[in-house]
Length: 391
Image (cartoon, rainbow, N blue to C red; front, side, top):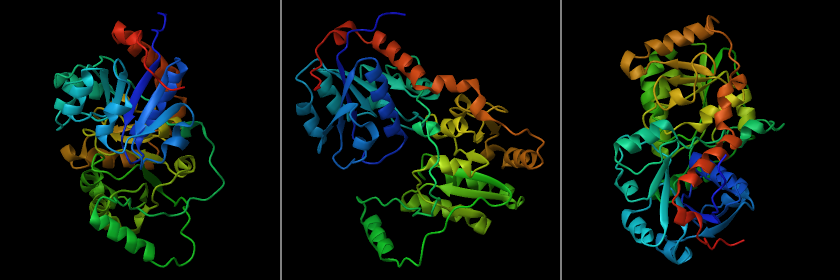
């Protein structure tokens, strides 16, 4: 094994105000670099209060109220900057005059403008699907995907507390409509304790995800609701929340299924959630980068039902960790319906995805080695500079 380059630190930038898969991935980056002896200084949005509990003392967190303050917060010159997502082009160009600018693309380039990534020195993709899209867009991309780590929940035990129904909405305080609706929701009287989740008879399919446009759940269910209507013993349980419009659109499509669909809101104890599911459902593929929640579910013994297309073909092994079916927008849900019949009749075997050897590539140890390769890729002048990272 080649010796580790003499790099002192990394200046990571994640200015998201919401917690999601990108923030879990950022934490994994901080931990992997720490194991390689590299300290992180993480520049965050002041409203993102989740970072301290997420990363503890592994990194120094520096709040940046305005993007324009990032220049002054960084060292004068010679820093390795790692952005989670692309900064505006003019900001990257300005910082690039003094620093080595890298970025992680957490999203595929499908129907997206890639110009903001072209001005970076090096860009990393979180899956082969993302890397291929970056290469096609003429972005200076590191050739190997930086596959993430199955979320820490895979190593936890479920709590004894029951799962209680929570709000399906995630109010965006930047929007006047959401602020008003959130205020009205708080005024609603609370008639006793919230319902407790109990698994119902039949086949239980679950969604464990934020309800966002990227997942394309309304488009997915628009194509498979007829197959579900023909199989009344199949239930849908939704563990996640989303913006008003995203939830509204999904509710509208699911309305024909009536009480077979239940909403439980965002749940912090996903271990207990997974214990109550037969299968986890993905959304549609083309706007997804990888799907760490799919890896997490499989690692915890829950097989995944996903469309047979990248990036899901990178994370789901058909007949071993889950089942892949034809895109229902192509065949009207025929493959999905046939899959349900095979599962209900037990024609297809009961899977134990947690025993699959594929999870070796999604461990922290494997992630550390991928970062070791990255450090050997970076130019020598970055490797031997002083990064001015605060202890």
